[in-house]
Amino acid sequence: MLFPIRVAPLLRDLRGPAWRKLVDRVLLAPEASLEELAFCLMMVRLDSCLTCHTDSFRAMRGCSSCAVQVIRRFRGEDEELLECFERARDEVMAHLKSGRLRVPIENSIEVLNES
Image (tube, rainbow, N blue to C red; front, side):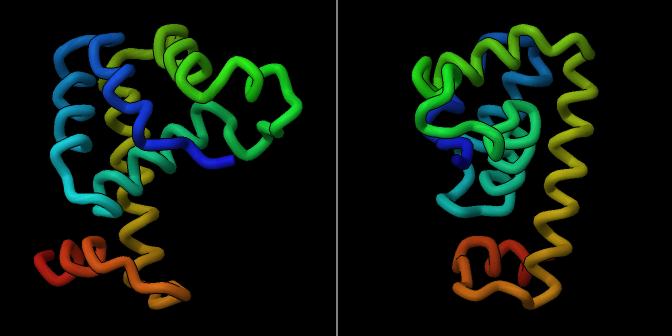
């Protein structure tokens, strides 16, 4: 399973101002933008989405409940979450630049051209 971006607005007010600013930035970004892809990658890692299966307890509770719980229980500071996001953003950028995409993602390519 992958992290559904539709859950992001529910996470906005769970942390401090830096986190809210990040979530707002992601929500304002175009669909499939570098920001959105990086946020999803970060949340997939934090929530362990890749080990979630349709018959698991986490899946039965739903992505929204899982993500809210993970962000609430994150023991680090907001700055650590922002660092996780920046690392994910760098990884997505490197992958996009590598040219190993099977299907081009228009908004992400536009971001690369602006860089």
